[in-house]
Amino acid sequence: MVYKRWKGKKIKPGDPNFDKARWWIEYRLQGRRVHKAVPEARTKAQAERAEISEREANYNRRYNQGSDIGLTTYYDEFYLPWLKEKKRSRVLDAESRVKKLKAFFGNRPLREISRRDVERFQSSLRDKKTKRQTPRKGATVNRYIYLLSAIFSRATLEEVVDFNPCSRFEQEPEAKRERYLMPAERSRLMDVFVDDLEHLRSPVEVSLRVAVSV
Image 1: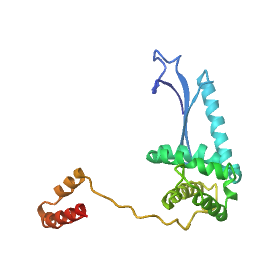
Image 2: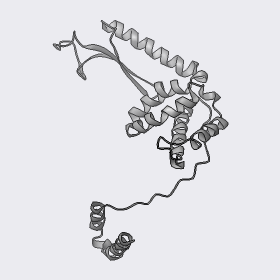
Image 3: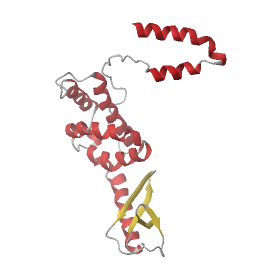
Image 4: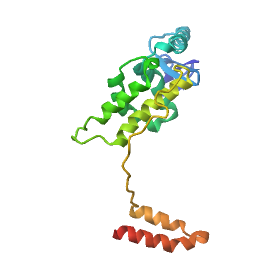
């Protein structure tokens, strides 16, 4: 589909800003929504030709060159757009952690990354210190592996690779986290103990007092 857009809104012929607006293309490829401006297009026909060219380029890259697609390319052109559309809340963490993935693996073809490579990546994180010169926590190391695994899981679903080298990977030990209820959380918790749950109020109140005194 091609259309013109002005200040974030689709417009039709007859709109006073139609001539000044840019042409946009929009289509889906294997469930992934492609949506982008075509600033070079001056006519609808040019925009439609751009859509065809873009669709064919993505198709060829997706199906004909899947065995050669690198980690960086796949993340930037496929995984990140999918993440922004489907799981936007995870984008910031992914963008922060992917830097180390790219630094270690570069644009190495996904099909060439083995379980042993993932183990080496895990070791490189484990043996390094943070900017504060403290040992990197096991939980932090695991988060990087989780991202790499998520990328491979998506690539497997799209049939870019045949397996996920992070599957059933041995995790780093994680320190137990102590969790405390804030005053507002305690109030909300106590508000729940009414009617059939009234009998739980007293034991919970005692537990909270013991936890605070400790």
